[in-house]
Image 1 (spheres, one colour):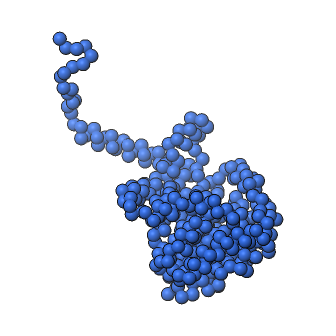
Image 2: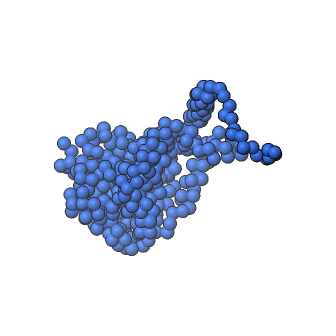
Image 3: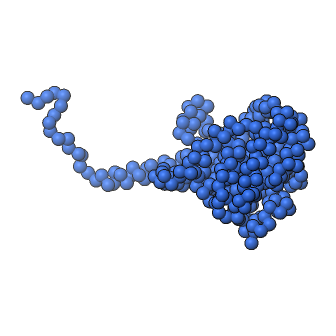
Length: 342
């Protein structure tokens, strides 16, 4: 007698034209994605390529054994200040590479270049006074540097990352994210506010502060001013700068490279407080007088000094080209590119 809960008879697959069903499902999925993408872009969201150690490693491997390479190091300020297009136009004989990492000070990347005797290019390093002496921040860069030295050991992961960047560079809806989309629609009953920072496949980030809500922008600036750390005493700060950076500068110069230390623009109340905490003569200028590298302060370059940071610390995308052209001009004036340009 057959069981009431099971049957030994094989299940029958419904007949019909399954090819047509799959085609219809694919067309519906594409149509829904297109519609969602159109609405997402209409609300201001741009595609954004997610940065990670694997993708950074791809660009790190382009800076070896080439005197024409100019590598840009730093955190978010350099990431949002450097324009690849403006650099290519201002220095067509040179090869610019964006190696800045959001939220990661540049000391660890500079150390990696110093340890690499194949690096004969120029390292342009964004340093802000409060980063000096924070050697614990080397931990934040370690995943990037470690991955760059073992990148080819994970070819599958590299291929997956490259394919992911293709999709991320084309679809703004991926930058919104399903969790944020659902949370915003159900909670606030409105489309998510677009992120004002987006990056492309070349690791070039652009900040469109016209997309930022004024209240959110003000809150960020307020929090940043409140979070300015108590400065090291000037003598201790100088000792730390000379201890941490100068040996790396000298090693890079010893194997045919060069280093440019850059203080990028700051403005507003943040700049006022920062200048009080870190008087230029006792901090920045004291280090510049002792450094073996080239040193550029934004206030010494008129085209940089006139730039205004919307959040008091980062440049808007509309000022990236002007900053980059001014930086190239300042480096050329100091002879940084001599013998490197055709």
